[in-house]
Length: 324
Image 1 (cartoon, rainbow, N blue to C red):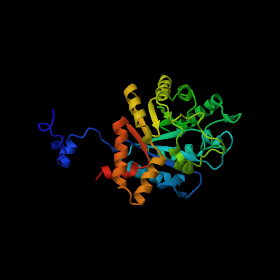
Image 2: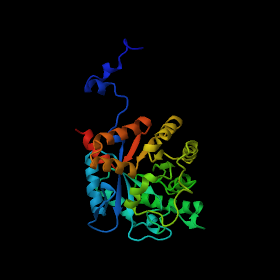
Image 3: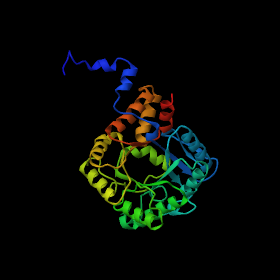
Image 4: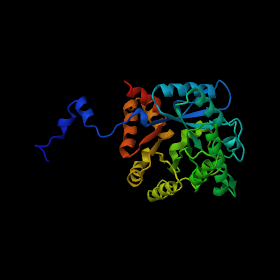
């Protein structure tokens, strides 16, 4: 069909026509809201680089979780700021650690809200790296044992889904084995299958207090230049019985999202990371962009690229807009 017989603008003439032929949809069911739980009481500290996002003590986390649930958002993902850190990140797998206690508190008040826990060591180690340090680098296999302990402790506290983000080789299989051995074979694993060594994480590291004390994470997180490696990483996690695959960050890696969507049939998660959030907030504050429209367009782009679910700090704002 060619102009003048074919005129695509006919279907763009008004909002009802545009709605009827819209190909991609952003729904509240697609959203997962990240939350930062801090040790202590009466803490609600706004993160300087992430307006509207807070480090919060458990009672405030529960209160915000109630807001999230009332908006229809199906799930939250938790990150923890412990009272103390040490070389082995002991609070990560302690039965009374910050995340374990937060999970119990949320599930007591909101049993239907899905609670996902980030499984990693960087928030709990005094060196800020994602595992056991040996000879100046993270020891992969020694770290697997701690990650499996951490995941098990989260599930024993009531977590519905565990999400390993560390990028150690073999961690999905190690976690799956431990969960199955303890009777938790029904608990899904949401793997950060494709996680790049990205500069977009800066505001998160302020929020989670997880900046490395030395070096960087490029020996275990992926090189941003690599596309085919993403397929190998995802395929390995599939072989180790992951239930979800994730791409992090999302915005600069929409091509990778599409690659995974075209090659795998597991639910696909995009992490709309802190730097992506902060850029929109900063530009909107200066009046350079329409913040709401750019936010929605960005998330819709992730859906169009293939994401089934999106972890986003915008989740509450989006849910409110979708209810209008």
